Length: 125
Image 1 (cartoon, rainbow, N blue to C red):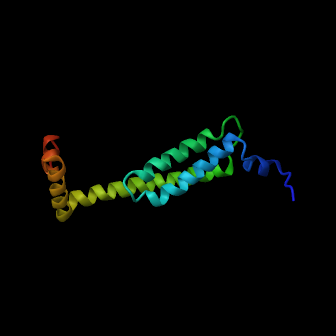
Image 2: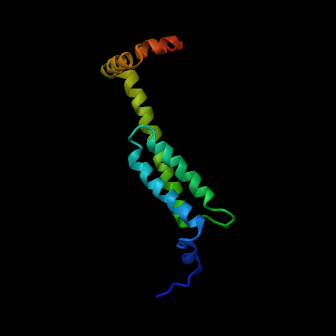
Image 3: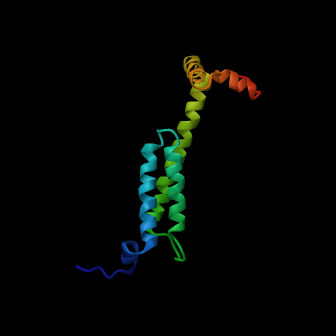
């Protein structure tokens, strides 16, 4: 059965670069959500999903449905990624056991403890 609906055909035309870019934005946005718990991956993928979704509009009047979903999922990935990052900083700065472990790892890697680095920057905790 051939679907002659213009909106359907526009959103599923695999030869159109804008449709492909919107699909990539959707995939990146979906991947940003679970990967937001691993370093900065979710933040990077979420930001890229939003950029690709906006760029996929081109000269069209409105965004494709894949691009809209990419923006939504990318935003969720960004918010989760920043939330995890802030939570980790807060935990390290307030929990003495984690702080001691961070100081030990920093001395092994950099030769200077994390507390000493903060002191050099003029930050007191």
